[in-house]
Length: 201
Picture (cartoon, helix red, strand yellow):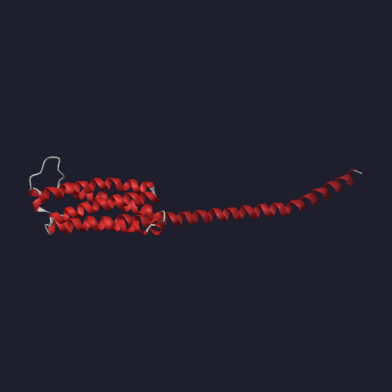
């Protein structure tokens, strides 16, 4: 009698084990798929991070290198260095440093806009960025090398206007990008003061 009950219990356990095997296999397969998906997700994120870092490096290095080249070729001015200036007036090295800082901020803000797809949705934002870069690079050769100080003053006013337009255009895509442009307005004012002193020494 007891052996018969034991046989029945063994059969029931065997039956339950067989019934549970598909469930266990399904859970194992699901766990294996989740592990593969996690690995793929991490790989994709790592790849995107590398691409983002590469694009950020390009966005910052190009305007900085162009600005450094501009300063090296056209950034010296005996007239500006030798003329009498009040103590609060920016020295030549301060102008160059502010120019490099502005290039860095504009490159970073442009990268933020690009990362949001803003240059595709608003091509004018890209034109504004290139416009301010061109105007800022043109000032040194026009004023220091050609001596066209009045033309330089026009460039300063145009640069200030383009920077204001950049603030508005970039802010529509990414508010942080728009805010990063604002310190560059101070640099444009500084440049205008230096130019005025050259026009009216």
